[in-house]
Amino acid sequence: MSDLHPLSGAFAVDALDDLERARFERHMDECPDCAAEVSSLREAAAMLAATVETGPTPAMRSRVLSEIKTIRPLPPEAPVQEVARRTARWFPKVVAAAAAAVLLATGVGVSAWHPWSQTQTAQVSVASRVMDAPDARNQTVSLDNGGTATLWHSKSVDRTVLVTKNMPATPKGKAYELWFQAENLTMVPAGMMEGGAQTYVLHGRTGSARAVGITVEPAGGSRHPSSAPIVIFDLSKSV
Image 1 (cartoon, one colour):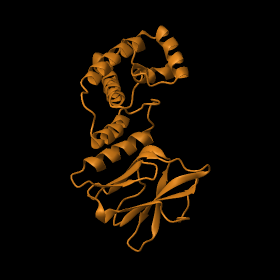
Image 2: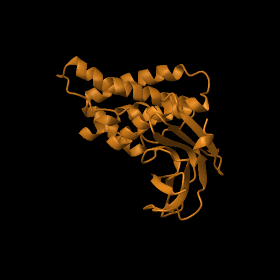
Image 3: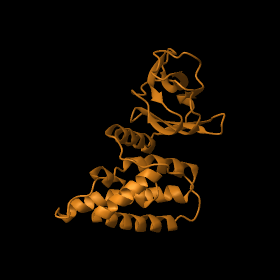
Image 4: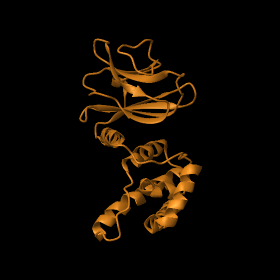
């Protein structure tokens, strides 16, 4: 049952599905550490949610969605461990629960909460560096279904990040492929992406790319675009 320890933060803000919730409730009956953590995390989340009086700006919502992924819950330490290590374990979960409380209070749905992989954590770290860079620039395009896609890039970090909201799902067997367009108009593959809400760091350095495009390709990806881009970002027009 040790695999359930990291779910205490998600349970505290009611972000588990019915099966996970039932399993974790049984787990708490046998794990007083997790039961105590849930109680503390719920208090922290409730206090933060109570402070939200107005709706967030679009920029704030995007930033919260990005930053929440940088917090990775850790399993509880045994009671005999020193206080410093126990505090180091508990504090990130309080921050994660508090961030989730902001999402719930501001109308952003939380469907599930699971430990992040090292790859996801690394991507979020790069995304934060790009968006926080002094020379960060961005460009937003509207999608046909009312969603948006925002491209961020920074010369100093030399990376590019795509943030999507309500991006339509691709047909079965298809996926979105991202491309850097070089000065000679050659399209260079920059990674595959799903629809919905995503924060995705493009593969490779931005370098001297003039644009970024998105096409719909076979799920395994293509070496060259099979159709015209459905979205094209002119990097020179970013603000």
